[in-house]
View (cartoon, one colour):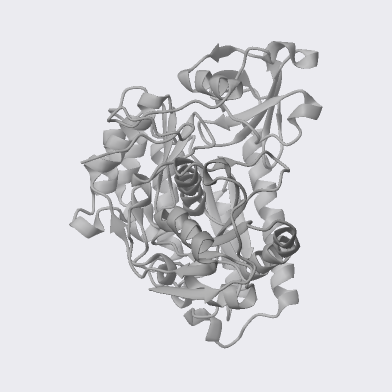
Length: 507
C-alpha cells in the first residue's frame, strides 16, 4: 500500500542526481546491517555517492530498529536534529526505513513532516525510485508492503569489509515470543533455496571474501518452508566444500530448532567456526513459558553440554532479558545459575522493554524499574566475571586473527591493530615493536597469528611479535580501495559501479 502525504519541506534536487551524496545511519540487529549494505548498493547503483565523513549529505537514510522502547526516541531524536539541516539545504531528502518504519508507517511523516520517504522491511529495493518520485512530485512517499518484494541478497551491495560478508538464508520468523515485535514487522519465515545461497557464497569468495556469516531471525529453522528439518546442517557442510572460504559463522539460532546434526556439522566441517551465539533470554522455566520460548532450562543446558563435548574450545555467547513481567527473585536466580553453568564468553544483556502490540505489554506484574536495574547490574557483574576468567585461560595461546578496520577504537593511540579470532573474540595486537613498525605491511583482510599476552572481559591483547602474516586477496582489495573507487562486475560482466558490490546471482 502507498500513501502520499504532502511535505512542504521537499524541494528541488541539489545538483544532478548522479552527483548527489548520501549518508546511511543503521540501528539494530545484524539483519539491519545486512539491509544497510544493500541500501548503500542500491543508492550507488543509482548514481549516488557516499558523503565523506563529517560532510552534509544530500540524502540521509535512517534504517531503524523497533525491538527496544528507546528505538522511537532514537528515530525522532535523529529526525529532530535533521530538521534544521534540511531547512538550510533546499532539496535535501530524508528517508526512513526498517522495522520502525514498517510499524509506524504514515505516523512518521505526521510527526516529522520534513521526512520525504518512508519504506518498510519488505521493499528496500524501492528506495531509489521513492526518492526520485518524492523529488519530482514534491511530496512525501510512504510505501509499506505486507509481503516480501525481493529477497535482499539479490540486490546490489556495498560491503564495508572486503574480507567478511553477511549472507541471508531466510527472512522473517514463525515464532510468537510474547516480548518480540519482529514477526509482525518482518513477516513469516521465507527460506532461500540452498543453490541460491551457495551461489552467492561462491561469488563472494571469488571476490576475495574469506568469512561469511549465515543470517536469519532463527537461522537454524532454515528449511521449514521446503520441509527439510536437517537443511541447515547440510548447508553448513556444503559451505565446507567451497574452496577459499576460510570461516563460516551463523546467527542467531533458536534452542528449539537446535538439532544434533548441526553440532556434528560444526565439529566436523573445518571452516565452520567453533563459536555459537544462542539466545537464552531467561533461565527460569516459568518465565520461558510466559515468553513462549518453547524450550526450558534443561534443554538449553543440554545443547551447551553437547556443543562443549563436541568442541571443547567453543566460545558460546547469548542474549538475556532482565525484568520480564512477573519475574521474581527466584526466577532471576535461575537465570544466574544458568549463566554460571554455561560460562558464556559474552552475553548481550537487556532490561525488559514494553513494546506496544506485543502480548507481554499487557501482562500483569510489570517489574518496577529500580528492581530491574538492580538485577541487571548483578547480571552484568557475573557475566563479566565469568567472561574474564574464560579469556584469562587463553593467555599464552596462539590465535589466528582476521584483521579488521575500525574495531579497535584506541588502536591509533596504542599503536595496535585489531581483528577477530576464529572463536570471534576481539584481539588487539601490536607486533611487539614500538612505533608500529612490525605492522607496516599488515592490512585489514590479512590473517595474522599472534600469542595472547593479556586478557580483559571483552577483548584479548597480543603484544608479542607476529608469529605469522598471511597476505590475502581481501587485503589486496582493501589496499585497492584506499587508492580510489573501482568498479566491480556482475556475473554477466556488466560494470555495477558499486564498490565491492555483490555480483548478481541468477538462477
